[in-house]
Image 1 (cartoon, rainbow, N blue to C red):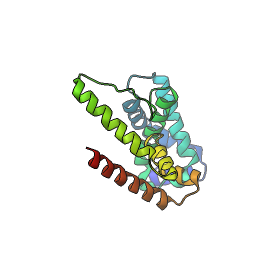
Image 2 (image 1 turned 135 degrees about the horizontal axis):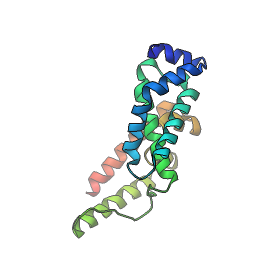
Image 3 (image 1 turned 120 degrees about the horizontal axis):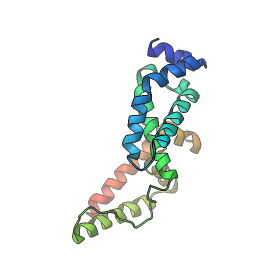
Image 4 (image 1 turned 90 degrees about the vertical axis):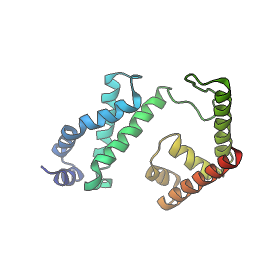
Length: 177
């Protein structure tokens, strides 16, 4: 079976097509997940996240194009792994002042803390809608399409607000540093 045929069969709810994708892409999906979570979780956690990826493929098969199956799976795997880390408390919140260092001297630590505070202040100073989009995308790793759907905004609006937010953040940081 070709990938195009398997995707078409999957879009028509054929379970054998899902099994085909699982056989073909499990190693790839698990590698992406392991790269994100490292040694912080067990192999069972990796398998659970991989199962979530293939469940998402089953549920969203209509959204996947034939030429983008592998990148789509990789992106979903990355997001599922990051979500699993957040669920287990491995991610730092935006307003935490915890700074993890690896041998930096005190001056470098102070500069890093100042940069972190500048970024935090710049994000928190954004217009509420822009801030929510920015945090959903960069902190919660939510896909643009999901943000668009949940916030009831056109996809192009979400993308342009992210772009403008990055530009404002860049300008703010350049001016401050």
